Image 1 (cartoon, rainbow, N blue to C red):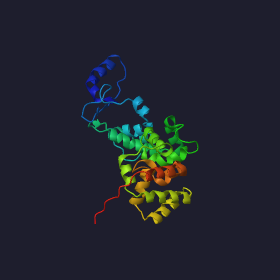
Image 2 (cartoon, rainbow, N blue to C red):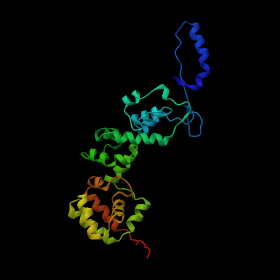
Image 3 (tube, helix red, strand yellow):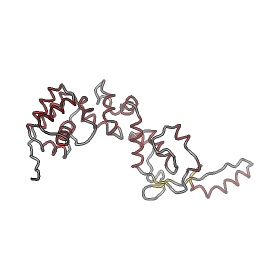
Length: 265
């Protein structure tokens, strides 16, 4: 099996093999793999090397799931292990039309591969970059908390900094913080201390004491604690951040001048 660009070589090679008295194999020619602009991928154009993909943190299982489906149809559409990929492969399922390499599709299978890892395997994948960034004993809870929100180890490094370091505030996070009154942050600190850092008890008490609920409650908290307005569940992040760091971040939020949110009469 080889690329269809070798199709014109085949008659000559068959003649050479016959002249040498050697067996002639059954040749199959596969459609070429094209880039997004329709040009064939090559070492000089558009092709990422395995070394580069490995360095970036792409998992081998993600690459196998993607490459196996490039120009080949599987009846199973979900993530498959190596055995299932091999068992489901059939020559009559190979497309005659060229396939296009799509980085978004590779990222889809990377996401699926990351979700397939257990916490120990996930930490082994992340450890070369995160060792020393995540406190000892919190490696497995950290992986469990952020796994659904990362594609590559660099994403996890950012969440390690947001949990255990000093998170940078995104612009929309600043807006979420200054959109509530300083009194909200005072109540948030008091109820956090009273709850002993237990997320459910804290947010329930804060809701009752402040009158904030839903997005008006959780968005400012997420912004203050992580510096972002999106990400993993706060319930999983708060034990990693810890009560002391959380109080310091809530205190810092209270120091920012507030801008009341305008409401339509």
